[in-house]
Length: 148
Image (cartoon, rainbow, N blue to C red; front, side, top):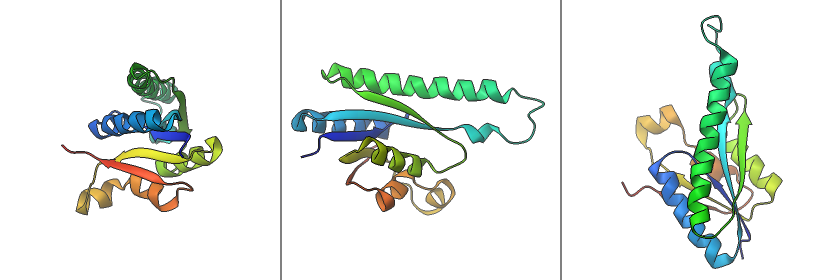
């Protein structure tokens, strides 16, 4: 039914729970899994560049993102599945749109991701990547909410 499962990952408990669910789903469906992590390189492009090395900060962001992908891939490999991976770079855009664009480009059949379940002021201030994905995704989205 679902042969191409896209899994956005970060370094949260919720993301790890979703990854476990995606692995089980992948095993049941005999599917392919693609792990993605989104980094925003524009977050260090503000003024004050004379005090910091923006290129070094962006390199560090890329390295951190790759570590997150590598850790997620190790979990998937423990289940006997070889994942595809992608570090997605945006420049001040929306993380949710980067995930949606990747789902279209990779021709995903489903997106499996976590949601932190923020409400009220937290949701207003922090937004929701999951909500943006659900609203505009071209494919079904399976959300996993943290049980913490």
